[in-house]
Structure formats: structure tokens, C-alpha cells
Amino acid sequence: MEKIEMRKAEEVHAGEAVSAGHEDQKKVTGGPKSLYGEGAAVRFIPIETLRLFKYSPRSDPRNKNNSLIRSIKQNGVENPLMVMPSPEDNGIKDVIDGGRRLEAARQAGLTHVPCIVVPTLTLQDAAHLAYRLNDERKSWSAIEKARHIQRMKKDFNLTGEDLYVEGYGTAARQSQLTKLLDLAPSVQKLIENKEITIAHGSALSEITQHDAQIRMAERVVRNGYSAKLTAKKIAERSRKLQMNSKRAQYIPNDIDVDVPGVYFKSSENMAELPDESVHFVVTSPPY
Image (cartoon, rainbow, N blue to C red; front, top):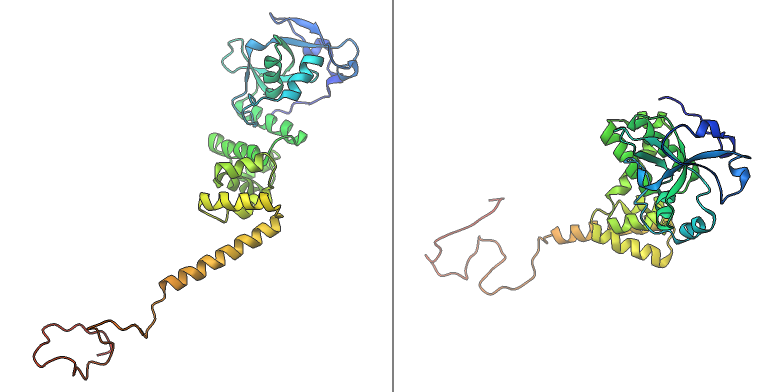
């Protein structure tokens, strides 16, 4: 993969960030000058020509973020978006990093946003870059990370070792994350909202029925169980279910229930029956 040097915004010079084109070039305003450097400029691009990158690791950026919208209304977009020309070469640019800022700026009524444009990358390389940028900020959820890993493996035929080389963590860690995607959607939402942890999710994944998962997850949140206690409760539940299952399958050898006309005894003596009245006999070993 071609390495792209990620420099701080204050190190970007106007001549590097701005090139000839139809986009307006404006000096950055609304944020501290030290953020971009004295006299620095970035390319201001019309929002209507920007779209979210198809392999953006974040969940739907249209979720309303009122605090971010208020900040942008007051100060503008202080941190430029990272974009690249779309593969279709149709004047549209894909937002590799900054999807939520883009949507918040749109809701705040802005028509242009500051962007740093990187050369066109392959979809795979751009997806890796988007992953690293989000992972460095630690601002996304385990579920978002798991979905991205799963999609990278599926769409690009990558193995756990391939992703390990790109900085996604060990194959075991990747498997732990993607296993969370088997949880009930409402339980995944609890992890996304950070109401429970990855460790809680791993313990809950031992329960295969989604309705039972949901009930246990609600109990965990309500009682504030730690991940360790959650795993213990689930193990106890599993043992009880196994014991109940064995009881349901157990048939006693000695039946002490009196059923009229039915005799539980040796057939050597059938004095209860009149002679020549037996037309059908059912026996079982030993004979």
C-alpha cells in the first residue's frame, strides 16, 4: 500500500492544499490560526459535491449531533475533512474522514467546508486509511469496528493475517469483535452506546437465543453487573438448563402409579386374567 504521510493541519501549506480548479479557495476562518498555520489555506469545497465514502467505518452519520451542529454554527468546521476524487472521476469527492462533520455542517446550513484532498487511492487502501484514522481517535464503537472488519474480509477477500499487517489487531481479536455481530440487534446497540462492554458482549454470545440474550442484557444493565459476574451468571444458567433437560429425559424404572387394568409385574403369573383370554402379547428383553 502506498504510504501517505499524515501531517498535522498546521503543517499543511496553501500551495500544497490548494490546486487549480472550480472550487472556491478561501482562507480558513472560525478556528484558531495555530490549527492551520499563519496564512495557511485549504480548499473549500461545495457540500453538494461531497459524499460519504462507501467504506466509511462509522455508522450512519446522519444521526443528529446537536453539540457538533452548534459548534459548527459558532466556529465553522475547525478540522478539515479528508477527501479524495471519486473513482468515477465525475467531479464528486469521497469523504474518507469527516462524515459526521460533513452532515453536521449540512444541518448547520453551510454550503462549503474545508477539505484536504489526497490522491485517488484504491478502495481497499482508502478503507484501510479510514480505519486507521478512526482507530487513532478512539471515537468509534466496537460494533462499528467489527462491521468494518467483516466487510473488509468479505469484499476484499482478506484474511485475519492480512488485516493484522494493516493494523487491525490479531486474528483472535478480530474474531472476538466479529462474533459480537451475532448478538441480537438491541444488544449490539447497548455495546454501541457503551452501556455494556465488549467483554459483556462476549459473555452474552454464549446464549444462542436472541430473546434470552436480550433479557439477560437488560438484567446486566439494570443491576450493573460486571463482565466477570455476567459470565458467571450465564454459566450458572447453562448448568441449570442442562440439569432440567436431563430431568425431562429421565424415565424411572419403577413406576409406582396404579393404573386400572394395567399390571406392572412378572408375566410368569397372570392370575388376574381368565384362561384363553390373551390374544396379543408384547414383551421386552430379557425374555
